[in-house]
Length: 50
Image (cartoon, rainbow, N blue to C red):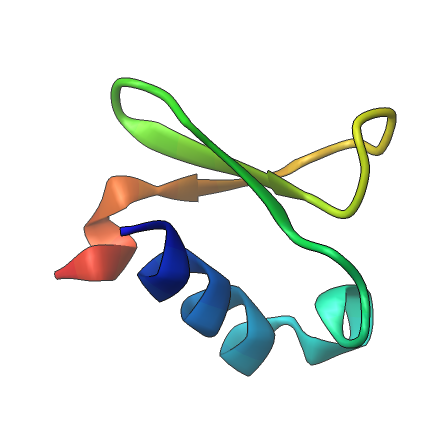
């Protein structure tokens, strides 16, 4: 599931995440995606996987 989120992020947000490590944190209804621990996360619904 984490790999699918990374693929989605690289496809739709290349300027933010290209050539950077991607950290995906799964919660109950959303994913928090960021490039490092201290960065503000991009919040994505789990509906992106459908």
